[in-house]
Length: 82
Image: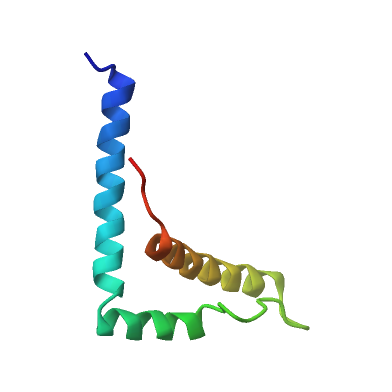
């Protein structure tokens, strides 16, 4: 008999696999690739978020954008092993 922890872990694993599949399904389409390309430009993916004369709040905002884009990329590249 499985413990509650094992059941919870299995449930979480199934949910994560499902979620990763959804990310990959959406962003591996031509339209999804178009959206990712646009986000890459707008979310400072290959750019420094700091800029001379920029106030701290603006830099934090830019880093937040960048963080979301990096999360999307991570979800696209992630693999779950059972």
